[in-house]
Length: 458
Image (cartoon, rainbow, N blue to C red; front, side):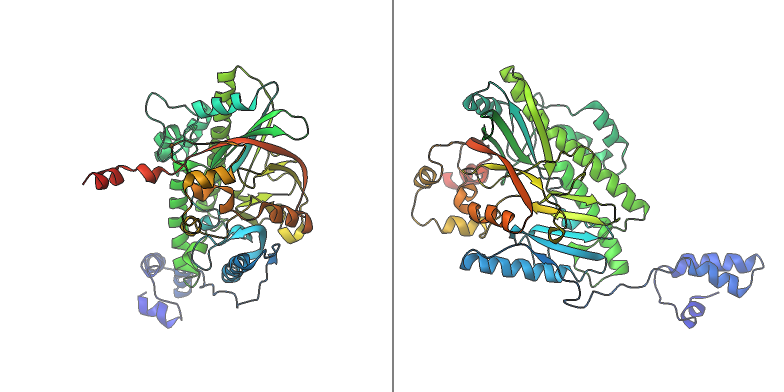
């Protein structure tokens, strides 16, 4: 049997011809019929190309109202991206949260986006896999003492901890990472980056519970370099699928089929990265507790950049959206955390599992402007003036020593408006708050970067 025989049978040419012909001719050599040989060849035939859905065929839920002209532009960009994304063949539903903002080229899932799909889309949980919130409540600990302790034990900024200052992850978790084919080469990173928080909008926030007055530590960060590396591997796997099955699909919406060995391996790797991230949060909390010789009275956590699987068999991708349905994970409580900005309370909420939110609520306040645009909007005001106005009465610290004004409250959406929309759209119920005392962020590491110092010295 030749390639022309397959073409004459109406089959599309491709790399699959070589193994198909090898098997077909083995059947013929063994005395099989041409029909049996063709059947053996067809085993290698790739699935049919999946076209994009027609524009507008699959609508999505919009749980956001524009608060001013800038927000109108932001919402329009979010809706445009979601409309493009919903054309992806395996996507089944979508929703937008009140804190939504664009996060890449048109068609990229926005921050505050939720997408249900038959498959796993690495681009829809992003490189910051399992970006998440964790809280530990301490009795009889002063807020300043806790903030001092956290500042002494945490680590912000690019890279991980130096040798001699590293904190080892739990042994059973490391053994599982070592045994997983997608993660075994990340062992060193998993150690180096453990008990670190990165940069950007990640933080350690100290405040007091509105209900009891107890002091609480809230941390926000993701899976650091191990998660970013897994994301890169997942995108390569998904891209092969996209090229073979749906080349019209945008690369950022490429998927890994769930019912495959690769899908199972990636799903299992996500769960290990999730376990690493949870341990990463509480390692920092425990280091602070040990420094104070304090006991943790209560704690819980939740992720907002992840993929969840429901009983309907679909994969729910949350890009900056908080689960609001019961039992979203084996270690889930009925409470989740929603931060707004460093000057506002962290909300403790109970989800409503609203159908129009696909069972999710917001993850924070979101942005209407890029970091660069926000800095440009400050005009001639000095950093000291901006800090004094926006952080009055708060103990705000930047790990690098240089403030990052693109993380101050004015960089984010109006917190009152986001909170009001959580209630208006029935996405979650606020049951308590952590009233701010102070927080720690990475700060502007680029301000004193080595290359800048060399340039200034010339």
